[in-house]
Length: 216
Ligand code: URA
Image (cartoon, rainbow, N blue to C red; front, side, top):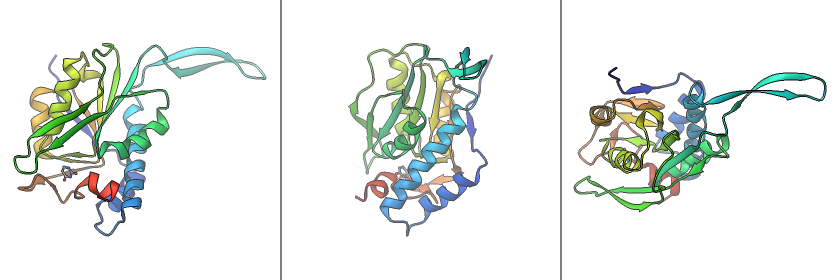
């Protein structure tokens, strides 16, 4: 069966609100970081809604026996923040996923050529093939950084069909690029913007997410 990349933009006032805070050029770094944390939290909530593997259990309350549903503890959950800007989303995601393993991946774009290079890689040698993987990167512009992250992940046995990408702003060129190779992907974002300028920034976007989150 053929598949098609899916992009979800959940309709939620909190997402709209924090996106405006993040987009506004007058937002100071501390508040920008808060916006990223909140967007990471609510997008993770939406992305995991029908996706986490669950298990039915029986339990006893202080009053009676009853049935319940828990997250299946046998299935590993991994979170992969793409440094630097993914770190701000991580804070929000981790508040919902305290038991997930976090594997940092540092990928930087060359400012002239816009080509990405990987400067830090804490991925495991091999992923459990059942692992559910959440990748965090607030800006999907040309798709180059995410393509490199996907290459590193799939080389280690990660299954694109079991991944969720959490981002804030996605531009069309990234969607086109990713869909050509990874059609099984599911992406959750707060907004789709049309374009990318000659310097690789999303328009209107929100500027350099790493610089703005960390005040650099
Ligand atoms: N990375 C950013 O931080 N901002 C963009 O607009 C594109 C890539």
